[in-house]
Amino acid sequence: MPCTINNNMKAKSIKGKSTEDIKSELEKNLADDFHPTLAIVFISIKQDRKAVCEILHNKGIDIFGSTSAGEFTEGQQTEGGAAIILLDISLDNYLILFEDIEERKIEEVTASLAEKAMNKFSNPALILCSTFLSRTGEIIDGETLVKSIESAFGQGITMFGGMAGDDISFTGTYVFTHNQETDKGLIALVLNEEKIDLTGVAISGWKPMGIVRTVTKSEGNLIYTIDDHPALEIYMRFLGKDAATAEDQAKFFDSITGHYPFLIQREGMAPKICGPIGYDHDKKALICESNMAQGSRFRFSSPPDFEITDTVVSKAQELKNETRSEADVLLIFSCASRLSTLGPMAQLENEGLQQVWNTPMAGFYTCGEFGKGVDGKHEFHSTTNSWVALKEK
Image 1 (cartoon, one colour):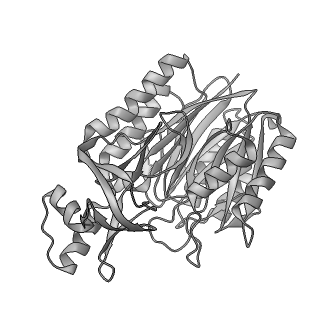
Image 2 (image 1 turned 180 degrees about the vertical axis):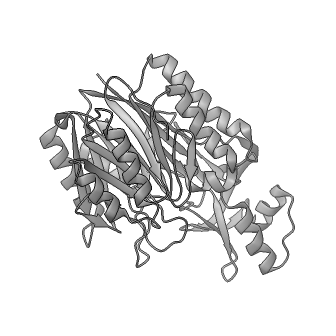
């Protein structure tokens, strides 16, 4: 299979749908006088990730790994396979940190992470992957995680990444190195930002539609009323739908989850993306993917189309032109709901980003994204494409 090579921080992408595929691709690329020190591995839970790790480890390659909800490299996208970026990067310029949360608070975990990272580098940057759902159903709160990292590292920390996936099976997500794995924790690739440039942005591309609405009654991630009317009634009216029965409503939400997210207004910040994912018949409330505070003001979003992906790719080109940056490697963390919502357009979006930077690329479909938004502030995102280009100085 073809791959792309750069002359600076050398990088190659490989992919496979089996352990044998990956071993064969690795051997083929190592024969070309290429000596990678690091492998960034995005892999389906259907694959034998321990066997893949053993193959890489036996070649003296460090491993930063996350399970996925679909994975891709330049020119190819799979569901149930693996996408790997091999990097020949100086051992002095990176550090892999693994944190199993267990019974600790997020604040304790991020404090430990920050102490180790700042002992190594005076100006660390993070490629971060966390688990989303444990085998026992525990979910990491992405917003709390990002705020805790900023508190531990400082507001200026550069950070991109995503939450692990499990092929949308909801059986458990994992992050891992060669000899460590957890379904409730995080892994960080700490980069020396004095030696490695990171250029990227987290952007959704969705456009607002209609008038500003107000959440007039809510509790956690449940919305009871919008503008003092039943939330379901307002939402269905906006979409021009009439799902009368509970069965009709269930089918409806299965078909549109992620398609029409809310764009929540925030003073001095870009809108927050939050989508309804179901309806609680007992409580007569819309179920959202994150909390919606009472009093929140939002607008509905436009239907999914090519304008969404064009916005993402155009922003990348604009950012590249503004910063006059080049790249040795591109990493993409795209929400799994973009794949279900945009269909083939999601792959075209990722390939468009790769063509802008013209460099080896790997990424995966996530259960939540970390990254700097268009307003320059780092946040936990939803229904968003968070990408970052790395360049050795």
